[in-house]
Image 1 (cartoon, rainbow over the protein chains, first blue to last red):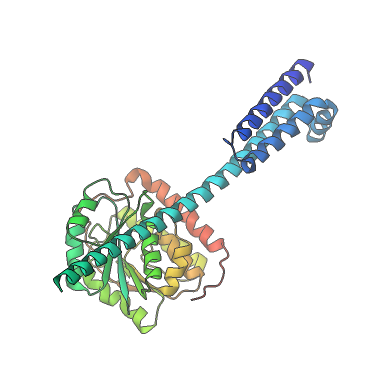
Image 2 (cartoon, helix red, strand yellow):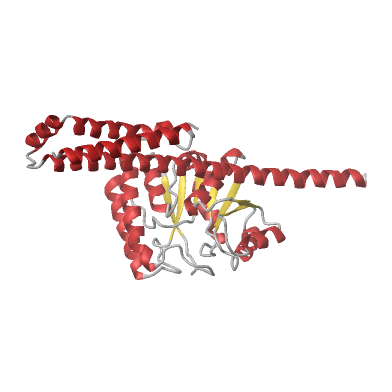
Length: 127
Length: 234
């Protein structure tokens, strides 16, 4: 793999890493959902720093140019991140549904209670 | 037996008042309308006419709305919950027939089916084809016959409510929930009913959505039959 590409990728990875740290410090991101990104960045950085590792994997997979292996691994990481996001969205939508339903039921019960109280009060006044 | 009629309502301003009056005339059950964030005047009509209604602050789809009704029924100690769609397709005069098997203890869930006596409004050819497809699919997966899997006109007892409070699909839930009931060994019965053509409003399944509908519901039925469920305790 060309030295230029390796350096470029490392620079991009470092910038992204710093970006994540800043967002985490500002509490714009939750660490739980960032971990997979951090693992992916570290994994790709390791492959950029030690090209023999990448050559070995390429040889095992039968890929001629190691840089293609790198892209394949990047895509695999992105797919993992997408799946984890889908899982998170699904659980959020489930939680939101429960919350919506319970709030609606409480609101209804409170309004019923208010009507009852008002009726009782008007009855008492008549007495 | 304490019975609650759950009416999911999304933009049914044309029919909701007539339906409510008809239900009150023909039955003695309590009624609750679940207003799924209607964008028309449904809510005002219900407030003006003192129709008891739960307003969902977000649009949850028919599944989420009906599930709200089941949870409300569970919390308030109802023995039977009946779903009646808000568009006026379901004739409330059938409600006594619908709950009879549950009162007798013969069934946990009773579905009102159009395709036993084949009377009344029979839906379009395409829809009947879809319904037959679901019947075959459910039969293959559970060994039980449900002639009208898409019917929203049904009654369940507390066992069913506990089940549906935990698991209920958000959109187009009926066929999946039938599979869920069968998978959890609930006794599902069908009784013949006649349905009317919708009295107003628009169907949630437009022609362009029907492909999505068939795909989603079929996968949903298969996944439902593959899941493991903890035993139901009353």
